[in-house]
Length: 317
Ligand code: MN
Ligand code: MN
Image (cartoon, rainbow, N blue to C red; front, side, top):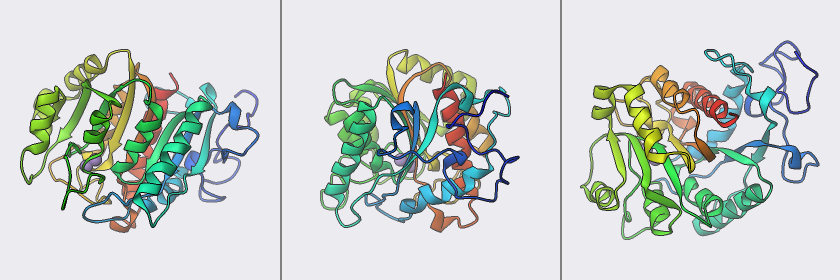
């Protein structure tokens, strides 16, 4: 072991993992006013906001439970032996402050926060929050040029509007992102899509724009290596954002989410899809829709933190 760096997570040999104040993966807490902020390479950020939720709310409580459960994570990857914290300066940047009484203001607050992150050259790894959080993040990160998108989800989140013409919900972020030229539809791929539908409006839009949808049936028929190799070829070497909705995973393994769909991947497969995604040109990533009120045991948040760690391991390379 080398010399101890400020950015190293607290080891379980130094302070037991059940002790101390929980930050993401026991990393140092470095907010935007901290004098070490300019040294951060990768920032893990909480977005405790779920005003886009149309059915069962709760992801506003996600970041806090994920921080708690993420203290279970050790510094070395179990398969590759990679030690991400030795390679990049990682820190818990704390939470964005949304406006709990205003959706519009919260969208602005999240966008302005991530513009600062972008100016600081920090690679953001965000913990939601519901899936509408991804829209203001993309508004700041890909303002100047559209990026590719890899989305693990059981839903497309490509709907035009919901309930009397509401344009901003967790079912519409990527429709808005395409309208606003934040993501390139030809470099957008959605994996794990399944479940009952109101209609085919989202799928028709995807088809007309050239978005690639890999349904769960195709996912299981072809297998993970083949599917992930296609995902990589769709986004290529250009800038790409990764968005991981926890409802991609089967509710037997991730019950703590607002819009579960049965017939999904297990927890091994949930991690394996990310592990096989190495070599991307990522500009940021998020894990969203973890809803602690629907899983007080914390199992979903633990799986979510494990997905975060897998993403971190592909981000440092
Ligand atoms: Mn989603
Ligand atoms: Mn979903």
